[in-house]
Image (cartoon, rainbow, N blue to C red; front, side, top):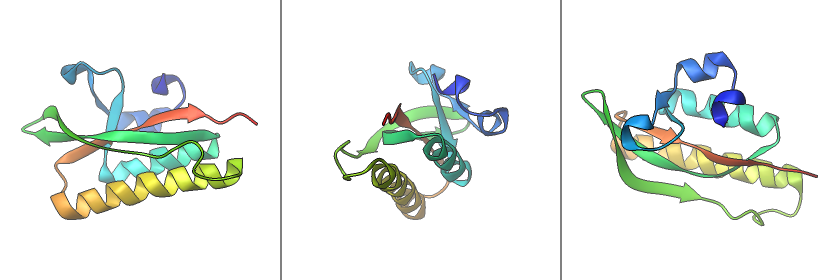
Length: 113
C-alpha cells in the first residue's frame, strides 16, 4: 500500500479516496510530481492513474485516466523515466486544460532487476 511507501510529508498533501470506494490516495497538481519523483527514485514504475474532481470538498471520479505499457522502454532506467514522463505530462496537460479542481491517483509497481 502506498501509505507504507511514501514519507509523511507526501502523505500529508494526499486526498483519501475512501469516499469513492477506492483504497488509496490522490494528489493535486502541485504535489503530484513530487510523489511521482519519489516513487521513481525508489524503483517504482508508474503504470498509470485516475483523475478525480474535488467540488465543495467532495471527491468524485471523472472516469479519465492514463496508462503506459510495461514494455514501453528496453531498459529499467528508460522504463522508469518513460513512466515518469507519461504521468507528469498527462497531469500537467489535464491541469492546464481543466483547472485546479482535480486530483490524481497513481497506480504503480516495483521494478525488479
